[in-house]
Length: 267
Image (cartoon, rainbow, N blue to C red; front, side, top):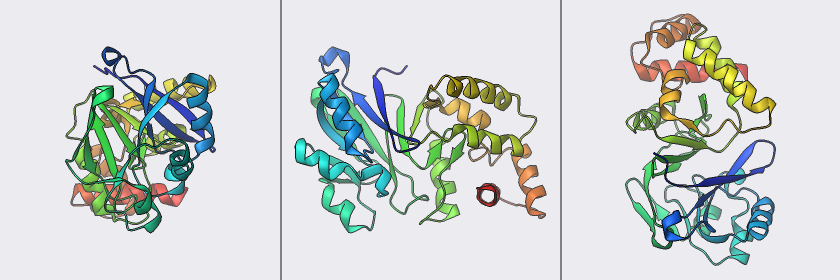
């Protein structure tokens, strides 16, 4: 069961900046961890409006829409910044006080919170995720119904990263950083037009968005049922990928790479 409270502020056209709140039993609901603050303005406005007390910043990767607000936030709040150790970009390195790699543990004692780090390269070379309390902050590696573009890593790396996520508990809630779900599900239906779980998800997502409600988070179970980028071992996805490519695909990694390329040709 999800035991932590998470809120958000929207940023740019489709970003979500997440606030992780302290556990109620710690009387720390006003304390927050800020995840991927690409823009400081809505973050500061929310902090001042709700009297939040920032305790830390989590960064998943170096792209500006995920860390562009960090410098300004550090001018106002003297808090630690946790982020990827393996991103080869000088600016992000200068901002991170706690560089992180696979399996390292973060404990925010005052909030009663603990998170483990996952290395999930592919979108960028050093992308990381934060898992704890049955929630996953995944940045741009996995989206609701989709996955991130491969900008710096390789398709093989992204496949390995997504395979790692499949090992998590089905009840894990996936907090990605963008509202891309409707577009992703349109593509997913192209891949699996007869997937009944997918049809139900599309209807539910359209209802949420028509009421200006976020489609995030989603559960890992739902992603396994409907997200073609996690379904690379399913015969229906393999057949669709082979029909698209016109050749036999012998491994799950080849299926994933083909589906990712397929989506890229449509964007």
